Amino acid sequence: MLTTLIDRYCRVLSVAMVACLAVMVVLVFGNVVLRYAFNTGIAISDELSRWLFVWMTFMGAIVALRDRGHLGTDFLVGRLPAAGKKLCLGIGHIAMLFVCWLLFSGALAQTRINLETTSAAMEVSMAWFYASGVVFAVSAALLLVLDFLRLVTGRIGDDELIAVQESEEVGLEGADAAHVKGAAR
Figure 1 (cartoon, rainbow, N blue to C red):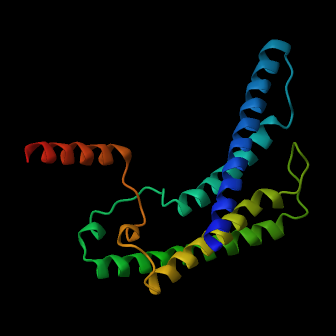
Figure 2 (figure 1 turned 30 degrees about the vertical axis):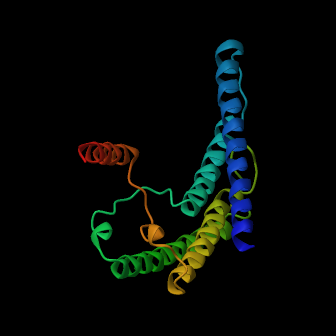
Figure 3 (figure 1 turned 120 degrees about the horizontal axis):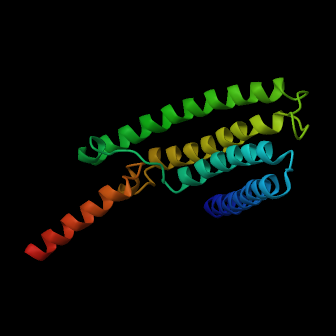
């Protein structure tokens, strides 16, 4: 039930990211055409595109956290036994929860400070800009707490003990090495 709710939330975020990107492309391309062809432009284009980019980045970070899509290295952790991997994953989750708290408290403070401040071009409360950090921090913290609870209750698989992905180049090199080993047998 909870997993389904989180999956739906991430799908909604993915659709919102696509919408943000589409609006950004239209605004920026339209503004370029208007500037060069008609010597005019859309006043809010640059500012709105910047805001959409920030929101899109934070939403993408939430989805990547859910999918374990953030890049990292498992050079040390990958060589540990299962108990060591679990300990490192737990410590990592506690550290990330602390970072979420720092981000939440800072973004919330900025949101409150900027409630009455309006942006230059759109004349919208700047609190909406800083609220992206609050949304990310709360969403990421919930995902991390759920994963941490799965870890301490033993409901996490051995394949999930490393919380990062290697880059695609390293993954392809590993696949080529495995193919060569398989062919040599």
